Length: 228
Length: 85
Image (cartoon, rainbow over all chains, first blue to last red; front, side, top):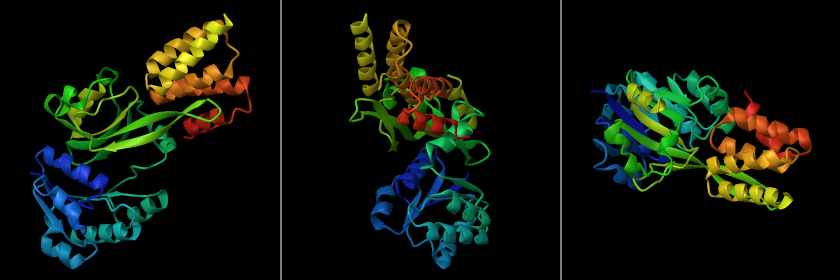
């Protein structure tokens, strides 16, 4: 079975770790913050408090045995670069890293990251990508058969809660996050919206027309949802 | 007629704020049949389409706003964002 190590258990990292675990993958979750690690206990196969910038500790933990590492270090750009470099040196086959900016992304590529994602990337960048496929904004290959995809929620899902939709049972996919546009009125009376990200949404969360899903699942199952 | 038009645009604004974008578009299209010269209508239409990720329609609506009101800053910002490829 494919094994994943998730380093950095902030909102993005913990959601990915949780979603992978729900898919029955073996997940090792690492963070230097004890509270973040405690929150993942019982959720993933193993959760460890560790400073991942320390190569020796990573090696002792056996991180090099894992197929894929997901590095999600929040604000610490230097740390994510160091950890990526170390993971590649240790021989981890695939290293997926969350980046803060295009510059960060370039450096990560240079130190050997196999896949880079910028979840907070400007809307404009995503729109550019969406031209190729109007419904799919972004795609991260987690393994040959599994991916994380950002796609517009099908219209027929609108006004239903996640527990009504029961996507995990029906389509075998897990909703990692929902991106939603929140409308507001300007002082001059005109309307506009800002984007909000609901990470790790719960069963009671209702889907609104125009929501964008970040889904984890088998490529073929994601494709089924895309076709709805 | 004028009151009807304003009521429809106002109703559409309410729908947008309630995140009922499909309804907003329907109402705005009805209003459009009464008047095609109001930048406010096309701006709201652009917002509703963009919220639904229907980007071609959103771009077209914001372009119409700028045709009617070339100094419309918000429409220009939305359009810039939508055409930045």
